[in-house]
Amino acid sequence: MGLTMTNAIVSNDYPTVMVITLIIAAVMLICSFMVDVLNALLDPRVRLSE
Image (cartoon, rainbow, N blue to C red; front, side):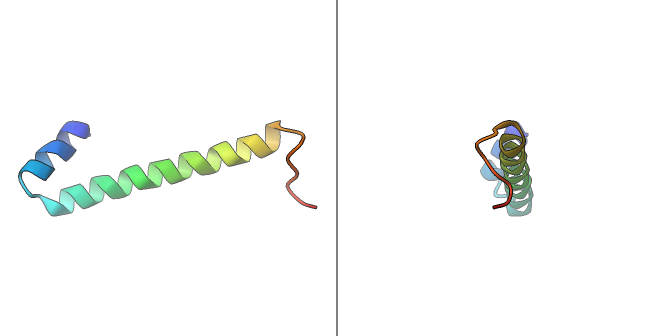
């Protein structure tokens, strides 16, 4: 994926750059959400509701 991104940047293939950037952002968002959920489930100090 990194090589594809580099090749797309060098060849000015903007749609490919945008799609890869969107995929990376979506994966980061999902991972961040999963870490927050796991933290809430595993850490007794964190409460889901008050």
